[in-house]
Image (cartoon, rainbow over all chains, first blue to last red; front, top):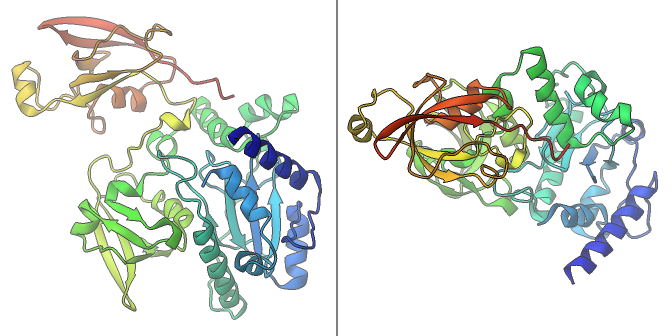
Length: 56
Length: 358
């Protein structure tokens, strides 16, 4: 059961990390470029929520 | 919560959820390659595979989220506390926009490509620059250049529990329990930690980051807490070797592993063995799992170790293994003076350098 859960999560994470811009109608939008995030923050005047994730 | 699960929960936050609603007020960005990251600006405990920053378009960091201790990588990861951090980040951004938040000085940029042994191990082989490799090869680089300060660089990220502080993790910096030095200084359950030596902290990540900045020869750290609408400054006395933490889970290349643990002898025991009072003599209490397999040494539990390469005392070390960690290089062979069954003998220790995670 645990390995199944892990496989599902790993699959989800693969999907997430495979697209430069992860966007879904229901979930929060994520950029994958720091430079783009800075530009977008300048444009929108929003703060940046930055995640560093080592997946190795 | 396990890091991978926590990551998935945050990344896949529904927009309609309270957390997703907060995140929609941010530009969210997820970086999975460290190649071009400014490791000076985004300095952190590199053993964490997951870490968050909240900052603005000028690259001013408002707060950090993440961090760990010897209990595990997930100890301080919590969906409630990250929601608190997201709320706090918005408040800090509002203050920044109103000019109420002073600008912080940006450190000189530094990149993974500037660490030669890391380049050799990763970029040159087209391999991923993993977070823990950045931290480890930075230390290796310093060791090779002769600039490694083991107190501040190998023994980074001291544990706040040494002060007697136990946090109520889902509630951010709310103190769940205050014992020992923290209690003596007046800290109480229900206090909210607000500052470390005058610097504001909002999360455990901040607390860990700024607590690490305390000079290792300091005898006191000032922790400010919010209590019933007032801020109180609590000077907490730092005990000897307050910076000492368990390095085993960090698996650092520069950490000479001697595969034994010991407890310092009491003054009475030193007299019994006719050893000087200031010696770091200690009784072996545990033999590491690799001692026999890697032929590190032939110590046995109960041995009294009273000198390393003829040295029997040190300003910092109170045990022979700490002396080895601080004063020797991983891979060195040292000679121990040992008392076993009343007889004095010399035993070699071939210290180990960790490589297997590289």
